[in-house]
Image 1 (cartoon, one colour):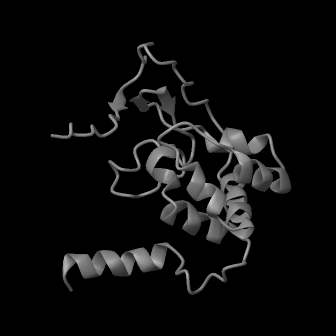
Image 2 (cartoon, one colour):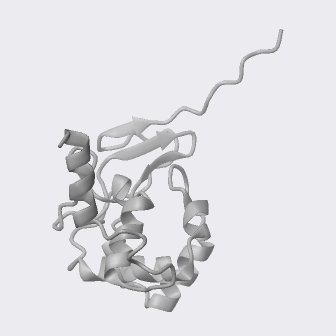
Length: 161
């Protein structure tokens, strides 16, 4: 078995197949699945990228100390465990359907998720345990971040000849 085939086989054992999870099912398992395919861990789980996509349950969705800096200032991925504490399931769905965030948060993708996906994410987050510490807060443009950060520069438009 080639390495890529092995990895695919392992992934199928770890992440429930979308075919096994009904589109309208609300469950912790579906929340895990949606959080992975939706890219939530990429920013909201410290060390996820460095761990090649392995989720450390102790760090899962606790936010990140890595900032994302651009013309809007420096933003940080929030501690979703802490965020979810302030909501019941219905309020969580309403909040995410109406929340507009600063870059690089793809809020428009979250707003496009089904209610059952958002409810499942809520259940998954609540299943992870205590929230732990808060992630760093937003820094205004021109204020130097106190943590490592990634600079996002919008593309430059070439001058017309």
